[in-house]
Image (cartoon, rainbow, N blue to C red):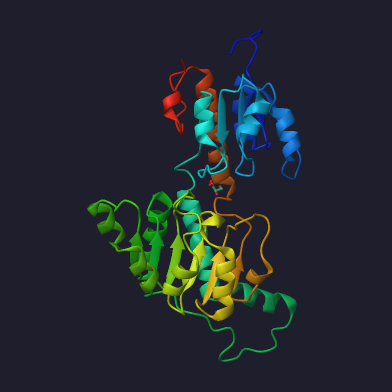
Length: 331
Ligand code: DGY
């Protein structure tokens, strides 16, 4: 963009990191939300008005109201997340607004965190940390905080997309059997590489010692894990959720934990974040505040992808990770 040329206007609902900020500054007249908390809805609606591009996080609901507030100049909404259930993509498409996400760069990081949770809940790490930290650990004892073995157990995966596969790949180091169900069965070479056996969803629920959820949130998966599904699981099984909270019916999970239907859970995501029901604050539940992709390296890559999509669009190029390619090329 040469000097004197008016740059398109972009609003970013987060300051991001320096590297993506530098890229954006070359191409846009950028306005950032600099608050340490998420911006109130009214502020987002006000600050997106008249902008040509929006960079947002999964906390921003990009719906018709927001698109109306933005006005006719808005051309692209670049989400800094792989999940995009916060964006009404059809509404963007109707208005010929491109929408994009950040696939590919957070799979390994999210898989690492899934294992962090799995190991923590199985081996009672959080309870142990609490005991050690508070000074209440008075002596070693034979049966102190004995948990459950991970190695050699059965890992059940629902949703064998990129993240599900990265989680499955790590299981071989623990000598685990991997079983999975997914809307589409993985190609034979992928199953071979991961040593993953395809089964019906019910069989996965029934056989898993650790059930890890990796389905995207959509109309079919909302509430997927409810009373019926939980009742099919082993009493000794643990549920791990690093995808989206509404995939699990939280009140049913609380009930299952109270009644000993399953042994425990490790959760990074919740139905109404940041609200966590009191019934989940239990010793056999490990809780995390949606940290799956939260490493500096990965968040930098995610922001660079979002910035790259916005930049490409205004250079007349197809945004590399566009969600609604039907709006491209612009008419
Ligand atoms: C995503 O990208 O969808 C994660 O939930 C947040 O990084």
